[in-house]
Length: 291
Ligand SMILES: [Zn+2]
Ligand SMILES: [Zn+2]
Image 1 (cartoon, rainbow, N blue to C red):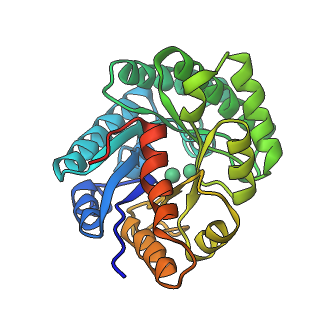
Image 2: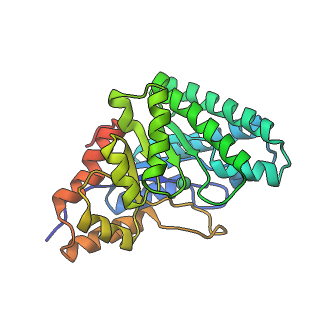
């Protein structure tokens, strides 16, 4: 049986300095049947920009924008994101010895710049922002939270889609975000534009119940679980890091396609389900056109 579905990757990275870069990623992904990719920028030092200030972030955003253009040049539909990753808070304090208050100031300034770019439709939105998923100091979590809350205001004001990186505590993670969202008056079609990236199924379900979106890592184990227990309300991501020197959860965007095709062959999932998570949900959340 021939599977007639185009695939998407709702959260991925590219690194033109240490990795293969967006052009190669886009080409390979498209060959495998990819039609859409959300490309999320990396921190300045990932591109070899080693000074910790505002200008470094602007440079990193410029590098990333070029990456998005390269991917779009391969006739892939691209959503382009830049942010201030919660782990940057720790890195700036630990490695670069920036005081906490200055990190907060820097983060807010960077987010303001990105907000302007998405208001002008140069970027699709802000990501990653959120909270650390590992143990760190309370001060640093608060800094990350304040930056996230500013980003949420830009979703309301400028329609910036937000890719959130959060701790994995399930429903209470969603509860806190929901309270902040209500406080900044997030509602209507803006709600689906708030994405819980790297969600566990339980977080994804809770987000869905409250009107938000989520992406699930496209590993074989998680996809099998999601396909057999969840309705197709979420999207799939690779969170590909494009850096051979950085270990971690690394799935190639095209490997995520392979996993889905394999599960289809096994009869675990049908074409309609794959169509919903790879096309319908992406069109609805990112407001892009398919075909
Ligand atoms: Zn993340
Ligand atoms: Zn990521």
